Image (cartoon, rainbow, N blue to C red; front, side, top):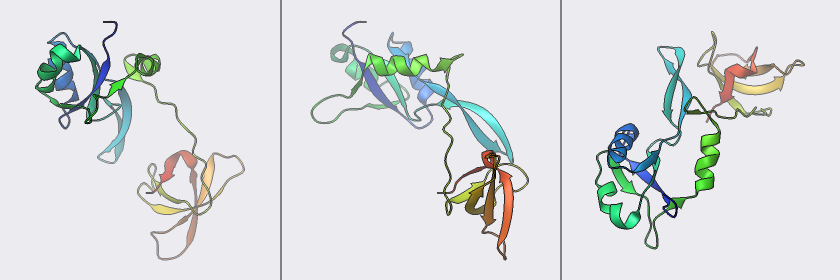
Length: 169
């Protein structure tokens, strides 16, 4: 498969796996990176394995002979291109993503967000799940945060674990 590029395939909504299976049945090399996403279901957080790039996957094939077949594969919306050329992705980028995999799932690097006074936040865990506020300050142990609640009638400070809060966009 040397000298054959990786192409970016846009899939139909929620059909990444269908496109992958159908492309592989045509002997097309496919890479669909997955990761574990925490989702809320019935007020409980669950981990679900989902595509790292929703609506996209990568496929390696001979463009001249397979363009039409790949374009009309079940689950495929289109091969990404503009007027000048078809978009490719390098082997190095694919390998870099693959190297972060553990048990077939890409391990995301968590970044500790540094909250600043005045950041609008939302509590997404614990008994105050769903409550909104404004970040006020970090406690001395750097594990908890003092927030000013904004969805109560009077101004109230609340101390919660920092891992329970996220930026409210």
